[in-house]
Image 1 (cartoon, rainbow, N blue to C red):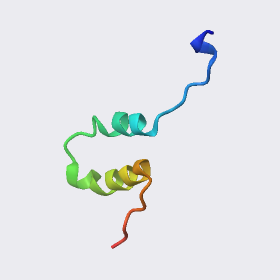
Image 2: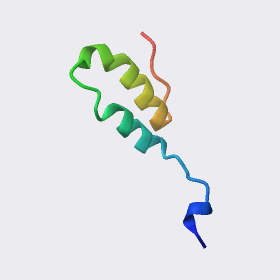
Image 3: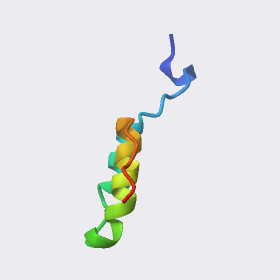
Length: 49
């Protein structure tokens, strides 16, 4: 069977790594959205302060 005809499954972990792998040097500015997305990928609810 030709794999090009099959729908591509998007891996949420792979997508997360691609998005945040090149985030740059603004670690403090990106901390909160990074943690929220990481919790989502891991199936966890972020704890609100």
